[in-house]
Length: 471
Image 1: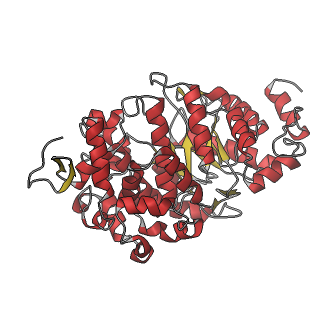
Image 2 (image 1 turned 180 degrees about the vertical axis):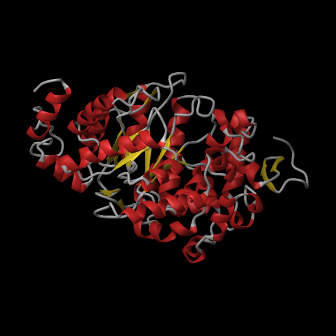
């Protein structure tokens, strides 16, 4: 924080002092609420006063400037080119006269209805979304996100207002089929799994991915479950699985907000387009054809040394441009997974989760959240309860469901099967409509969606006996 001179492009005067910032990238970074990743990168504000000044300065920046000044060079980055080349000027027109601060006021007003928010989403760039989030309180992020309705479908319908879906995550440290099957059965008994039954393979290769895909497909088909499966292997592995005739429902890939990040992950936009086309050719969806599943997380670009001195939250929002290009069924931010180097404690994790959900929903994505932390972070399960509840209030599309909140393969703490039941009961939220009907038909639910059958339904009793070694 210094007295400004002619070298500063952005200035703000407080009393006798004028403070300056050299670029839009610097201004965005300094305005970001405090987090360890930006401190690690050396781009964070040095003091709370400098952060407040940066936020006030950012509020006066016209939205149009984000179309003229990019944070990552156009010539060097295919994501920047995607953002600029596919920007919808007609959708942007109703808000084109606003500043970042004016955009915040408009988003919080009664003028910003679900219908109008849907109409402008293609005109909002990730940097615009990131910028406005930086000057919003947590309650602002919640209120606006709740107004952003994003519906997708494959074998069921995801994202309808009043609904909260879950990913059933039955990971196993040795990919043991019996252990995975037991976790799937446990999750289904708690009404989990309507977003996807998704496995992170312990052994990540094409043969193992095909084996796990076949196992999940057998379960889904045998019990006629209106859901979809996914093995979270590299996108190129999934393409090979499709070529080998595997029953692929969703294509997965972790994505970042810069080309250099995605290069480090081993893919580009052309790879994703090839995978999407391959999955669509299978025509496995019954009520829709959204076939992609993406995961993101603040800090991924910095951890790959691919952040271009851009703050981690803006890099994260740029990843949503990649996701939006491919009309995914699901996107989720694995918010606390990378570790305390990027999000230090429960407060930073909570803020990041709300920011990610808000930005993604504003851009038109079916956003969920892996409400999680690593064991060396300054966070605990109460922090996760708070974030999970706030996200559910804000209309989060889905959360994770994992046995006992503890992923024994990935070794991190997240949300459990019964956590999803809690938040549905507390807020009156339903699973997806098709899955809800299946739960009642199979008698997993009794008379209503909040009352579990405390006896094993007949359809599953034989399967459970087999897992236990019975007849």
